[in-house]
Image 1 (tube, helix red, strand yellow):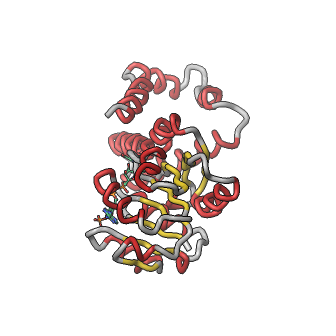
Image 2 (cartoon, helix red, strand yellow):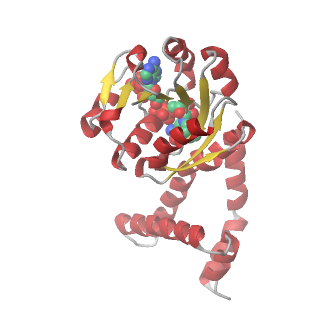
Image 3 (tube, protein in one colour):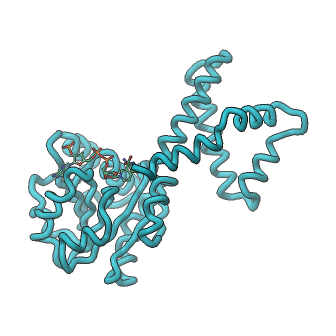
Length: 255
Ligand SMILES: NC(=O)C1=CN([C@@H]2O[C@H](COP(=O)(O)OP(=O)(O)OC[C@H]3O[C@@H](n4cnc5c(N)ncnc54)[C@H](OP(=O)(O)O)[C@@H]3O)[C@@H](O)[C@H]2O)C=CC1
Ligand SMILES: O=C(O)[C@@H]1CCC=N1
């Protein structure tokens, strides 16, 4: 049995990814917040909703998916039932050290999923406290594995990994939206422009994943000598696209 505290954007995405990819919703209990978001999701997915953190007492693993503002009050309630459980916090500001400080002698992990977990194509970075055994990690993997890739990293890399994989779906969405705007500007219908831009992003990503070539060489394959693509690439460089992406990551990293 697993529990969630919070089922907003990322909590809801992970729960959806689990259930849609075969995890039994009868084995999920969720403590939601003040709105009826959790109940609405429960109507779609069939998991149990509870009102109090202590009602998660029967679970083995608890995922915390609240924002920084609610973290400490949630941890205070969780402390009463946390003994013997594996606790995984998605909250950006939740470090392993802080979780241990508040919860005491409990195995804790800090993970940063991304929204593609919703369709089982997520990329989640995770850092475990030192007392996590191989068996414990396997348990977490057997759950989050339903939502896509799970990669263990030292905590000093979790923040930047969370930005490169966790914030960037929004960056890519902005790119896709802009590409679609350009298609519309040049006469495509909005639907066809979105279909083309999204289809391209899926296909190019799949190719990048499966190919022996790195993305730089894949770009070279598209840029025919004297052709249209290299003119577009030159314009991207002229307008600082590469630097804009790096600056976006810098901005996300620096509060
Ligand atoms: N969005 C993303 O892609 C990612 C987010 N994160 C991190 O996850 C955290 C949450 O982000 P996100 O999901 O976007 O934010 P949301 O605001 O969408 O979700 C937070 C949820 O927490 C619920 N909540 C608040 N207080 C409580 C409580 N006491 N008990 C139970 N539930 C509670 C809220 O419920 P209600 O609204 O009903 O009050 C809300 O639905 C942040 O720290 C963020 O950095 C990490 C990786 C990716
Ligand atoms: O915007 C945020 O703070 C979170 C962290 C990763 C994705 N969303």
